[in-house]
Length: 200
Image 1: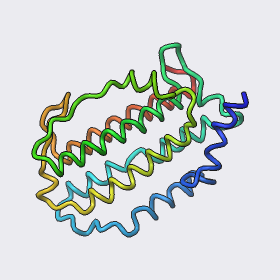
Image 2 (image 1 turned 180 degrees about the vertical axis):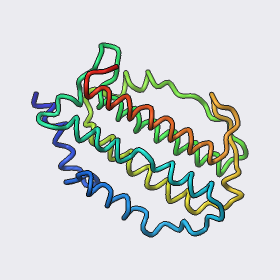
Image 3 (image 1 turned 30 degrees about the vertical axis):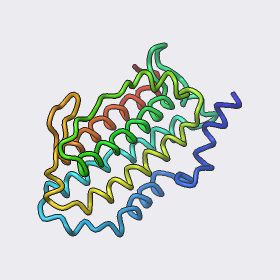
Image 4 (image 1 turned 90 degrees about the vertical axis):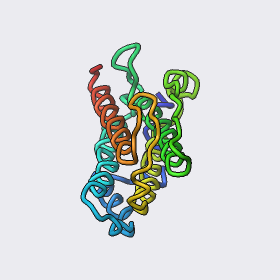
């Protein structure tokens, strides 16, 4: 019980998430984007891509807050023996964000790189998803999305057209990378929300 309570309280101690409620998180998002040079965009598609990239983060924070209520037991509750808890979902998302960040930079710096797949199950079973603080993972996710959104905002039209080979989707450009990131986050936000109510 003590470990669970400590993991729930990390939300209050985190420099990124300290005292954050739904209203304050919305304010943080506004502050994070206040000085982003988005005026370079010449078409709606790239503006929409940047918006899509930051979508669902508020909902992810809300799921974490809900699971952290009381003693934080919901963070670690698995809806089934072979299903992930909210905490495990967050750690998976954090590792996925690291991988996607490297992929984006390779696409921008290397001519049509081939992205290798990564063993998600091996990461989950060896990197302490069930013991490390979930708040740390959420902080990393929010920070990476912030950094990458600033990078996306300064890219030229030519850079948005750069491509790479995705292991499942084939050739993708920067907008395609954004869509991959959005779809992955959206799916796991739903998974985490269902885990808080005991659904697979």
